[in-house]
Image (cartoon, rainbow, N blue to C red; front, top):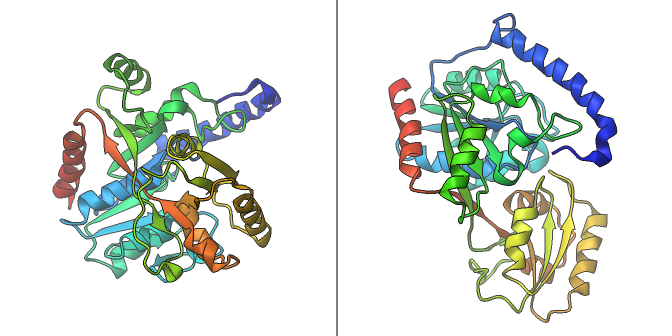
Length: 358
């Protein structure tokens, strides 16, 4: 959202809007071509930069579809050092794939995960080399206009609705909020469980662009903690966050918006030191020293190191920790839950689209 402290950035937002509006107009009028594919393509993305929960919603779609269809996920592999098309497998390394695709490949080894900056080329390669594929999920592809998906889902964070935000760099919008009209489905993510029906109606009226769109609300479900370093996890199982009030925690995050996670953990533990790194941060030896120092600073006798699933992918490849710290390091998986029994309607929309177009 816009901040008066950065008001000097507002003129650059006007210029940014002009550029993105011209680009979208060229695609909307067909001057720049968008390619449609015979295989079902579901795009999940957003208009806001980061922090809306794309990966947990992508994982929701995978769980929904994989029992009936052969699923593939195509991502650009943000911050990877490799080029072109690449299949992501559990043994892959994060520098070659990006953290989110590697997270998906390790959680769902039964599906095909690939990275390609050129999503159109990625889809064509999968269709040619893996013709058994039934449906492709395009991760973070809403602004990739060269592909015309069969179904578009965009997310907006309840606490940072895109309709109340501004264009970059003054705000966090990647393009004009009116372009949400391209979406078939809008999901309000990270919604509080106690949202009232009146507030739901207000947000629906504000966010929906046209009557043909479907709008849903989801909340975040935090699951039991999992060891980050499985190779030193002998005898360790999933660890519940409940009943651990006496613990002190060092929380290590490198995600866009860690606020909701921090608020959740504040209610679970008596002491938290939060080390907040930039989104998709590659950890260094200097960072490990900060983590060790924070660990020593904790006053509690019982201690844990906590991080997110996405950060765990990057931390696993960083070995500059003693075994006792590795044994104390856990990540907290998240899933999404649809509010007000909307799950059935959402699931049917997705499944019907894939069945009819497969």
